[in-house]
Image 1 (cartoon, rainbow, N blue to C red):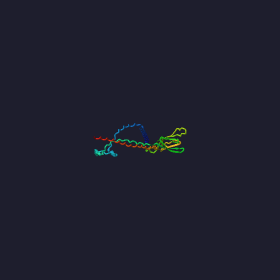
Image 2 (image 1 turned 30 degrees about the horizontal axis):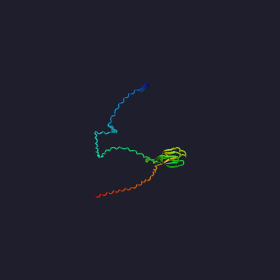
Image 3 (image 1 turned 90 degrees about the vertical axis):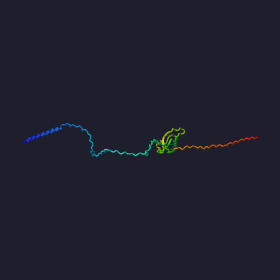
Image 4 (image 1 turned 90 degrees about the horizontal axis):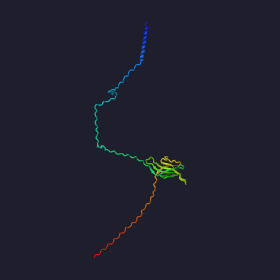
Length: 249
């Protein structure tokens, strides 16, 4: 007989709980103002390290003693007079002169060799400095002939010469003008360094040598003229006779 009112009470209680839950959720969704940010705290210096901190960290230092004794003075031994060297005035250093390069040896005769490429004829001849020498249609004129200095790395002969090409004049006709075929230095050790470029002939240097001294005729010794005969000194004249003494009276 009491089931009707009990059911109504339970339904009312459930409705109230639903309303309270809805109200709580709505209040939670409302935006609340952010709390104020407190100002930063002032920085303070770290407290001084305590002795026990150094012990814990393993870097403990011993406290210096209250009084430190000064070190004993060092007494230097006396310097004797024989141990002191006399002062030597500085000497002026003279700059050494660089060694002068040795000069090449100059010769007055060059030994040359020429080759005819057509006939395979080869000839070796001497040419004095300043004197033209003809070989077929070539005229060789040596201007200088030098031998390498002793301080050079190779014993070589160097010749400065000119080579002109001039055919021989035909009978009854003037000689044609010469045409220069070569001018410069030739090296005996390197014939291909500065060669003669000619379609028929080839030439190169053999060496340099000194010309023999010219023979000077020796005159026959001149005999001195015969000495004149010595004349005997003239005989002394006899003294006149003394006068006879006068007779005594």
